[in-house]
Length: 282
Length: 336
Image (cartoon, rainbow over all chains, first blue to last red):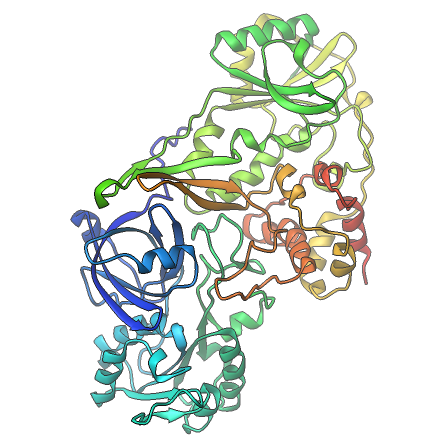
């Protein structure tokens, strides 16, 4: 049998950087447009999915699509300079070309969340994946009941999407609670001061007809999940995303698995009930 | 059962010539400085006379150490991206053992279970396998515990078994029939030699399916740590393994042009799963050793309904710390 028609699954789209936003020290957001318009029109993704972004000459790096699929014509990614590729990416400017492969992975189940209250809890650089789904839900606002966002960072300066946080603060259909770690506040800071698990515990959240979505560094997730459990959120209604290292994004290169679950194919979105059934290799 | 033919040593020489005339490269085990290596040959005389197995596996024929996935130029800020075409030669793999012939199925499962990998497929499409049964085995061998056997036909297009005056030939697939059709006069029908009598004896060491059923419940068993204490994380086991498929993708570039390459990797390396933040989900060698066993004996069967180990024993022979996979699996199968 000939499979000569097989496509090169490792070939990225060429993307033009349309906009660069400095979000926080070392953190940038790129708005990316497809260099080939036809590819751009065909491209579809759902919230929760990720891709591999590449700098030609340096390599590929994995992160989520940080924009909402309801915003057509572009995708956005937010990244922190931390390695070879992200450092090279940070040097790129408007008009430069980078590569993108995707979308990969599973999605946040927005259909299953219809008619429910949503509580998003994000720490530090983990707001980007939730920003995609938050905007997605805000753009389909009638589908959901109360929307609450708890976002924390080490310091005021480290908060990402500062303009959007301001916009959410001004909207009556979303309840935003921002917090910074003790010592990270500024004299004019009006938000909370304290670690996310404590802040969440003090909000008086009801688990009734409510879905919780938690994203953040491992230590934050580890300490926040017990709080949600105490508040009565069942593991089936508690979601998070895993961010294991990946090279292919296609279920072949063999490094992102936790147990038999490939984060790149079966994830990155998991319920706590699913995670409880996997070895803690994440 | 496939019909059995007799192929004399002279007939094999003529078959090699017919294959060369048909434009096929023949790769076979050869003796090179005391090592058995897979090399291109033109005559059966060049094939190693006394070999158990090659040190490296034959997976290189479909999954090379380095594969160019794409290339590009970046002059003047403009990226010109070029798709890469695998340089796949029509190849006959001669003399691989039944264990290794059976390993291609496991590679195929990973490369094509979801999206299709054109690089692997282009090479596999042009590959035919003339396996040779084992008449000897060593203490590392455990094919009979891994679903195979010294004369197992799975994976070979033609399987030869050495008998008095030549070989017993079993034509197993359409690709095997196509090879036979190149020189049908050399295959004498009606061979009566007893295949089973010449095969090596490999005692079954453990029950694979029972081990698979047991693994989910023994993730925290101390056996993994005990076994891995001697592991130095060198990755030799993965590099010689005929089914290990884990790979890395790296860039090789200068300021004007570059290539994206796929390279062999190993779950035994500490960098394999290391996050940019410094966090490592498999932080210690015992977790990495356990991953190796679970991947092959728990996750493969669950995902692909097949195993990621053929019991060839190459990893055991290559291990500089004398880890013996068969013994470790027996130990795991017996662990409380």
